[in-house]
Amino acid sequence: MRARNLATALPIAFEAGALAPANDSYCEVTVGGLNTACLSRDGLARMMLQDCLDARTTPARHPKLVFASNGHAIALAARDEAFRFVFEQADIIHADGQAAVFASRLLTSTPIPERSATTDFIHDAAAVAARHGLRFFLLGATEEANAEAARVLAQTYPGLQIVGRRHGYFSRDEEDELCDEINLTLPDVLWVGLSVPREYEFAVRNKTRLNAGWLVTCGGCFNFVTGAYKRAPQWLQAIGMEWLFRLAREPKRLFWRYAVTNPLAIFLLLTRTKTVQTAR
Image 1 (tube, one colour):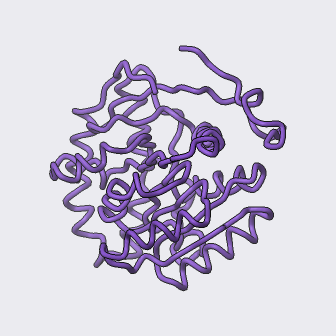
Image 2: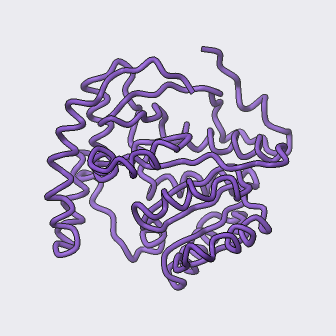
């Protein structure tokens, strides 16, 4: 597998000493039945930068679709053939859940280096984007949450260009106009937080209408950025029990989801995780 040093591949205007070299390829493992990228958070951010800079030189730059694998997605993909088909249209599936990392370490020869939770990755991505001039568009959540997330990100990462944003309350009939609106802002990274499965369906349905480097599905990420949703303590995240913290905070909304999906996800992680000879 041939590697390429990102520092030599970037235009001089985008070079920065804080950015480590990146490879132009990576391997995947099957985790819970889904082919998942063996990328660290840093590696994922560097892949984003390289792809977005490359996309700027392509006239019809349809975005790479970047989806997040966790217990909920793994269970839904096993139970719902239509959802699985949509989810597998992703160009990159990254390990949003710690359990996926644990399973890859236990059952594959090329484990995933670390969890890349979208709620963490949006900050990694914003830091890289601010340093290298990438442009963000935020789509999803309520108008209030969307506006506040844009404000917090811009304040936290000076120089970050948020070229557009829109709340997530729109109909399918409005999507053509929405895609035109997004394209006019010339985004490099489009963040789509529309809940599961709507955000994945939107991404696949509109990939060829959109011009960007990456489209990243991000669920309720904007609410975490604003602080409206709280993260679990770090030690709970490290042992893969963040879901328990969320359940304790929202038992009525989340009890049945976790009661149904967690046992199935655990079974799938144990029985459908393996090394595959796949390089991307």
